Image 1: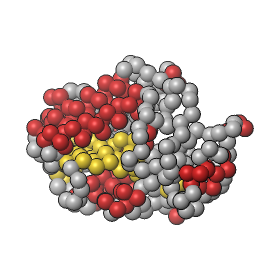
Image 2: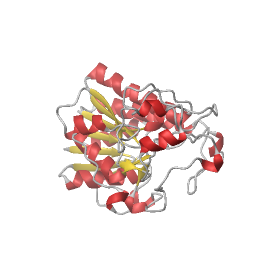
Image 3: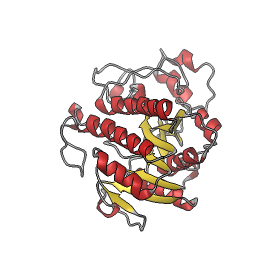
Amino acid sequence: MKVLVTGGAGNLGRCIASELVEHGHHVTLFDRLAPSQAPVPWHTDLPFVQGELTSAEDCRAAVTAARAEAICHVGAIPFPTDHPMFKSPPPGLPKLPEDETFRVNTLGTYYILEAARRGGVKVVAFASTFFVLGLGFRLSATAWNPSYLPIDEDHPLTPEDSYSVSKALNEEMLAAYSRAYGLRTVAFRLMGVYYAHRDDGARRFHERVEAPNGASHVPFDGWLYVDGRDAAQAFRLAIESPDLELHERFFLASDRTTAESPRDAVRRLYAELAPMTANMGPDDFLISIERARRRLGYQPRYSWRKKA
């Protein structure tokens, strides 16, 4: 299959490209920077199209150049540029306008979907985030609590910041294009992506979960992560599977980030949530990936517990 990977020079794009090539797909990368210019540079001989997601012409040109039958849409701004904590950009990134996250993430997805349906693309797999739940960059400074545990894809979404909201809107946009044009779309709600090629301490594991600084509760984040190589597996399965519904959404994780049982940690730290764990087993994730297992055949291969 001929596949276009947006954000193809980045960390997740790199993982997806490797997975697709390994399984015989023909991959073209689309990004504003070449792989050799990426924050984590890498070398590849794969075809590369340079352009901007916010340019309809660039998106159409990339789809045409790839002769794309499928798109893995990964390109995005991965943090809210208008949030107070990002007044100074993350290390290695330039200072961006306040509206950059919302503009790039929403307009870029619109242009990619337009290019896809005009170019006869059959399926688009999209990198969303578990932050659509509302547990990410909380602007209201209020605690976020789940409505039930374990969380699944039917859980209500209450995002507040521009990154989380843009991803939730992107999911709705994918669903709209599926309804309107019959374009098959899949949204993956990724959880704390870890990259083996960038083993820089971004993945932190704990024997036991502790409340920070003696606080009476901890920010609810599910204590989960997904290895970029496992995420890439899911993207490949999504574009290969003929049996998915026209539009699907999946949470993706590889493993938990603590040796302690998530159920037990909730009971110890979140007294008000403890009753929700009544039907959970000690190894159950707080945010379930069972739909991805069942519908996609997704099986995480990499875990800190396997020393992979």
